[in-house]
Image 1 (cartoon, rainbow, N blue to C red):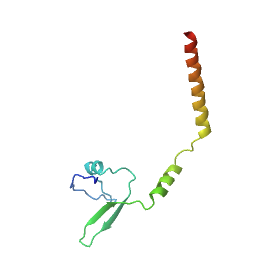
Image 2: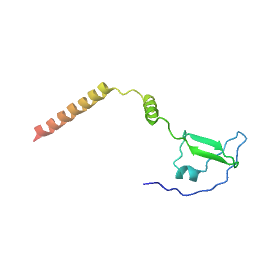
Image 3: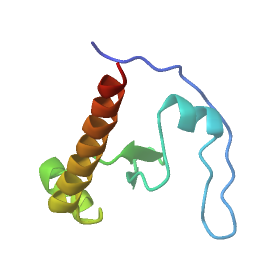
Image 4: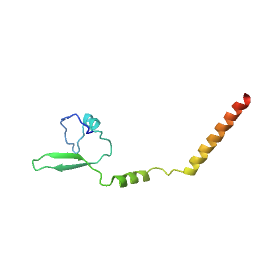
Length: 99
């Protein structure tokens, strides 16, 4: 199902650093977040087009993102789960002994 968007037209001004701010309503409608990448190009009619960058290698980008996450210690996680299970079993056993 194709997603539809509200068409919004806003006037923006170029700062002295050559920057523009995408209006909040457009950012919200188009799900634009910090660090999103866009391609900007000019047209022969004299317009400027801002287009969301299509990822060239989505799997590679996902793997690169995963590399930035802290290392996961499976052994430590297993030991913690095991300790919690032993403690839970011990508590359950004590409750059963009361009856």
